[in-house]
Length: 137
Image (tube, rainbow, N blue to C red; front, top):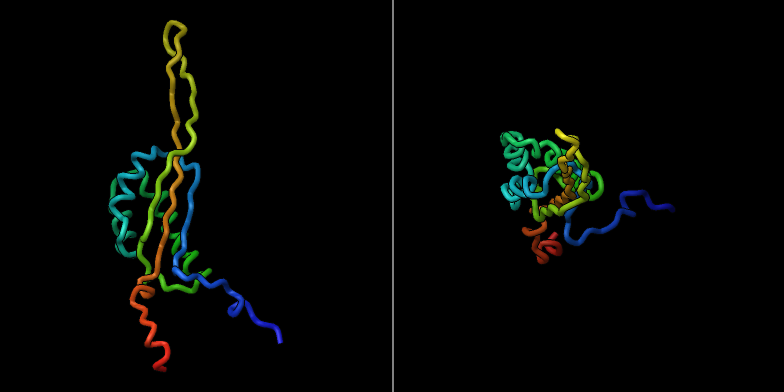
């Protein structure tokens, strides 16, 4: 008898899922300003924080949080209501340097920065897990 996909799923001992956004055309400093506000918050609270903040960086981060939650529910069968942001990481990406023409034949340097954002969601129920309850069934 052949096993179905539900039996062959990988086991995740830490019950966490992540989403990684690379080459997002934002400054890493501006992204960290928003990321620091949501670290340690629940999934629903994070969505409220990001929707109400007036910064341009909130939209790509919101997409990443949605993606991490979708990964958690699809890959590990975790409920979105029991997720929280366990780790967030913003690292500096590539910088594209251009010259903008100015008066008298001079050039003005323009730097377009990018960043990489990683968001890790973890299941709250994993912390509430008691090993003795498993055998009491």
